[in-house]
Length: 229
Image 1 (cartoon, one colour):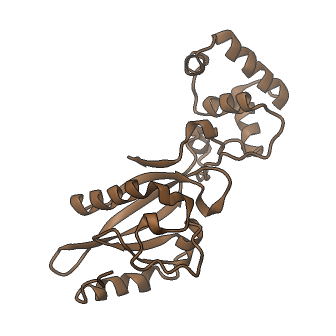
Image 2 (cartoon, one colour):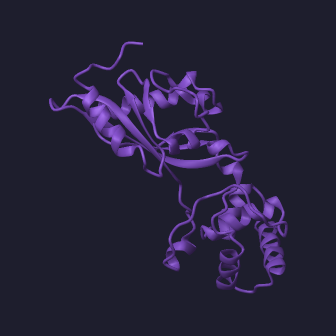
């Protein structure tokens, strides 16, 4: 591997010093999409062994499952360099080595030298926040979306409907998504209310809040990979 231009090393070193102790995952790549540095939070996020030297490695060379998305990561790099601006994507994979798919918001920003030339990109990742309107109605801080739920009260089909109910979908809209009758959805909602022992939408939303169901997203609605937004 050719080392980075020594005139650019200063910029990369300064950024490394800045992100080294940040709690969020951050990393730096050169114009050839080779990794130059990742902080410890990024090692944890990518589930990369701490003894793996990332310097000079391309995405497909990492000993991690997400390496299968290398082409998409490189496209993200190139879009950032070409636009000369921040480019944001949704990355969905088994981050932190978890068994469930989790969507994260990943941003890449161009790195400039004093001549205003783009010499690489730096990236970070943050959990994707809950989409539930309940959070905004109650002026709560959004929580992290999760496909896992510690609740055996509801069936998988009922949990799917609960997610759509919290997004304020109507019975007709939910029925259209599932390609089933309005009556079937009405019955499903009735059963959900019975199990939750509630009678109104407001009571139901309060139940979901305390049962930690308001940040649940059905895993069928997300897929592995990179979504450009």
